[in-house]
Image 1 (tube, helix red, strand yellow):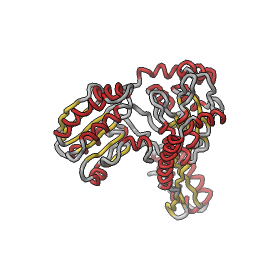
Image 2 (cartoon, helix red, strand yellow):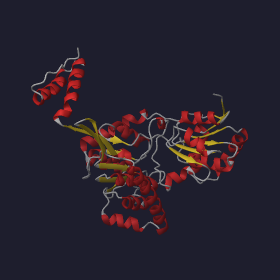
Image 3 (cartoon, helix red, strand yellow):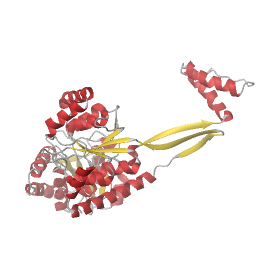
Image 4 (cartoon, one colour):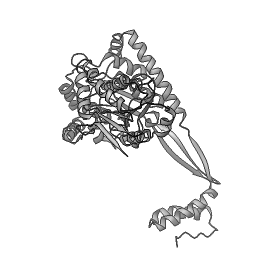
Length: 434
């Protein structure tokens, strides 16, 4: 497959977290050993915050009063869309049972996790939308307890819009804490919180590494790396919109890759010309982030045809995938590796990030090859069950005994034997594999 890189990334898109692993492990060990005292010390050290860690009802009301009504209306609009989409997702989950053989019934049922910890970034940017995405889906899933945490700012606390959103979406507790200490507090069940069954939400490298180290002890939505976006565009695409969309995603951070894949050289060259001045028009620190991301991680790839474009996209498996090309139905049917897909110029990644209803917590660093993003499904366990009549168990028991002995697992075999002897004392069974 022929590709020409008109712009090639200077650095690898995925950065290793191993350099900070020792620091994160030390913090986790300290908090596990010393509990709330250690967590409070780290909160004071890193967040520079000495207020209440668990927001009181009065503090929540005071924060909500600071949010302009127009922003409240916009948040409510986005919340309604995300909730509606999550409810539709939940409708796709069905409990069922089936009689495998006469008298022997097996089934599946979905059970929501009891306790959820939602991490809502509040450092470089205050991610109001992350509160909508994480808390709402957990509430729709039916989780019993939802903790929403976000990094507070010194002498200020959590951004009032985040507090308003977390409360609107159904958080039971709002924890004014960020970083590793917040992840540890929710996992270990500090400050009166139930120990989390699952942790969800994006965060910085320290948060991602804490989640990685705690996986197994607690469930995860995913281990997120830097956000990434890819645009597939042909001759019909508007170069200014393509360039603006690339820059819009590059502002996430200095290490956020953005890629353009096209089969049209003129479009590619025009976009290359347009991106730098669009970046220069951004305010700081957005401009610095976008400039570094484009310089070090941005790519423009020229392919020979749309099939080559699609194959390249599937290989990259982007978190966000935009198609600005003719015959959108072809692309929808052909593409297979992405976190979320945005078809046509009339939609953009920012819509999904903020308000359109689909979730913005998505797989990064190529993990869209094997997983999707956050959804109601992530909060729910698909568990199985079985029951049987005595007659229905006969053939299952015979097969179990023989397979177990073929494997050398005599104890397993005898659990089948004893039932056959009890239920059918007058019958003879050949229960060896030979």
